[in-house]
Image (tube, rainbow, N blue to C red; front, side):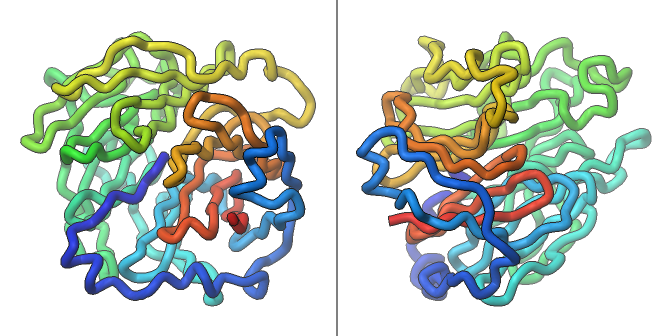
Length: 340
């Protein structure tokens, strides 16, 4: 997903200059994987000999990276450890927040932490919390984090959400998010599951929650195209992995569901492990999308331009504010790839 949102002008004015242009190989634990250029257009964005650097490792399952331009660092979730980790270029990683997604909101909830992370239009941290089964706002400054949250969405028609996963803000301030069952202890069979579907939702600025589509199994990563007219949803269904596209209507609803790219043919293919997941939209309109084998680079029309082969199951990605680096959360690691 494209997890960063354009902040208010006053916030940008006070932001420190990005540190990503100072990012070097120095704080990389090691390099890994390879780059496959499939279409010559990819050479505008990534070099075939670019190094995939590991910036942090030893986690359990990393997700939800977001670049915090105001403070020059990256945040990402370590879901099973119920923590958020901070990565600062040339300083490495450190614990940012404990109890990031399972805070004991209701009895019987399990210890899964936050998944997707993003900033709202006011520059505050929004979390998709698997343990608490809600979309929440961290009620603390970014540079003084606390496990203190305000619920933005936790129920639909009086029933608890499954386990909100990933989200993206529209320019009108509304939030689109997915709600698969991955945070539930036994997935679809968890007795705590209250909804009989998995949803794609829109949360309006005034707090109204609208169900947009309840027909997709395992909706996961979510992104909006640059013109805000198309919603892309990654479907991590191991029987039919694919990326879907929807038209975004003037009232915020979606229509004209279609396949953006089908990954079903890669099921069981050696070196193509993994399923469609998180995405990041580049200012060119191209889309970096985690999927089988690593990260795919799509054209706006869904043509595959390149693949960044991480060698690990790959969950999500985001861009630094200057788009000089792509950060990738892959299984137990945080990785980065320099861009052109």
